[in-house]
Image 1 (tube, rainbow, N blue to C red):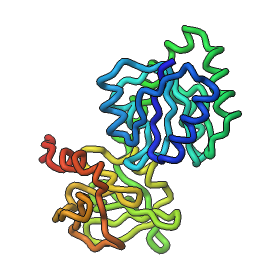
Image 2 (cartoon, one colour; image 1 turned 180 degrees about the horizontal axis):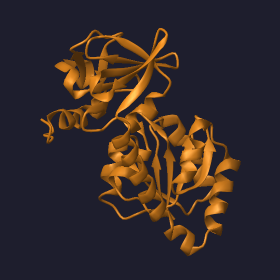
Image 3 (cartoon, rainbow, N blue to C red; image 1 turned 60 degrees about the horizontal axis):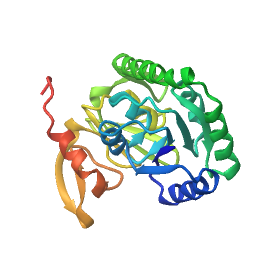
Amino acid sequence: MRLVIVEDETAAAVNLQAILRKLAPEAAVEAVLESVQEGVDWFGSHPMPDLVFMDIHLADGDSFRIFERVEVTAPVIFTTAYDRYALEAFRVNSIDYLLKPISEADVERALNKLRRLTGFERKDYGDRVRTLAAERRSAVQEQQAFLVHVRDKIIPLKREEIAYCYTRDERVTACDMQGRSYQLDKTLETLQTLLPEADFFRANRQFIVSRRAVSEISVWFGSRLTLSLTVSLPERIVIPKARVPEFKRWLTAVHPAD
């Protein structure tokens, strides 16, 4: 059995591989991928594995974005520390859903479930993925604005007016191009699925930034980058080294509206 693990936490990936060596010694882990971009690149250029263990919350966004950009027809066992994602996970091609920290019993149950699946059920996964990708693209197109509270009023914040979104202490704030801040009732992961990829980039775990708001880029320690925006920031925006090539491609890409 050929396996792929999509997980950005080293300790979690090592723990899962140790469990698999015990429960399924015949299994071969062909790749450990740490980001959405790595997932897109790997699944787009390699034969499909027999099974994928996939963390939902990755450093560069939720892993559902992989399914939107490349076809994945292999069975998937989702893993995450956030149970609010359970419903959406089961809407795609998940054969199981494991909450971290993952135990040996959890993995054994999921593997047994996989073994019980018929060939027809496994082939059905591709259709589920394509359906979800279409639904998510439609949601991005329809979500033109977010409703935000300003004192005793509720006003629409158009997505093209957003300079950045920022999370701290489980609270998410959006800042517009005039430097005004608004509290949002959505997680940064949810916002990332609703904001068009051509215009917004998940810089790190704290920030999503707009192309229109990026004013300056500086080289930072360890081959990282820091961003300056056209509005003030609550803290420095640092692009991790591993994400620098993807950020450069995103920022310099030509779009019809440019």
